[in-house]
Amino acid sequence: MFNAQYFRTFITLVETGSFTQTARRLDMTQPGVSQHIRKLEEYLQRSLLLRQGRRFTLTESGRRAYDYAIKLFAEHEHFRHSLDNESLDSGDCRIASPASVGMMLYPFILGYQQMHSGLTVSYSFGFNGAITEDVMAGRYDVGIVTEVSRHPELHYAPWHQEPLCLVVPADFTGTTLTDLAALGFMNYADGVHHATQLLRANFPGEFRSMSRFPRQGYTNEVSMVMDAVARGLGFSVVSRPVLETSPWQRQVKELPLPQPVYEAFHLLTPAGVETPRRYTRLLDEFLEQRRHTLYGYPEEPHFDSHS
Image (cartoon, rainbow, N blue to C red; front, side, top):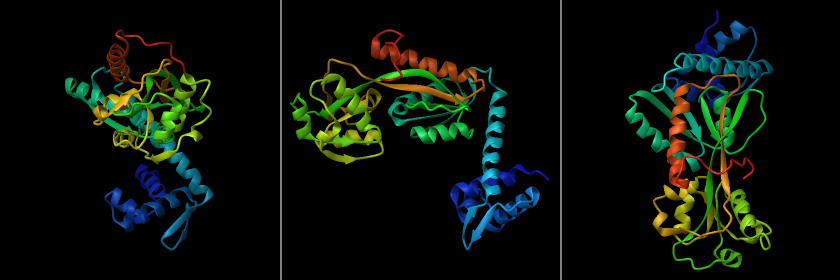
């Protein structure tokens, strides 16, 4: 007999790699987890796991069952959330984005939620790959990403762009690439990519590559790179929301440059699935407010997906 809970247990087991952790996450006993897997194997008439003591690997049937289960629950979530697609101010909002825009968008959404008590919000900060996987698995309805990949199950649409900022310690007095090289570079996940874009556009005759700039450190959390810059450990290039929301913004400064370069953001949704209207209104209101702040009017410069 088909039992969705058996598939849910199996998904959790594959993702945790542990019967013990699966039992803890699902508030079950470990024998209960084993029973669910055994019942699922009996239902499918296939072995799903190759057990090796406390460890296991998936059989070919197990891999196919996992892929099917992910799609099964994604379709279930899409259906459940589609039932209230027309409501503008009620329902669940499940959004994932990079921290570079999320540190500004998420507080806006919380304020929006205060004005619309019928909304509930689940927000995840992540990198592009994880966001894409979450949208495909149905864990989030809308993803905001900075990279576009071609996938038949996904739809991408240009959404917004934010200026990149060259940030240095507040007492930094240099203006040249040589001065920046002497200071050194504080890196993060997209740091080299963003710095390359901005420096190449503004120092076209001098800039060759980021290998010229000594690496002073790395963090996978873009907001924390501002702490390192504030301490005088190096410069970095970040999206403007990172600078504007940073608790260290008074200890750093933006080095003015003549040629603006932008970080482009795209909306990621499941292909062929209508996005509930509450998302459209929420995100449009954020963009209107943000564009007024950046440009003084509700439109932004031409969207360049290659910026």
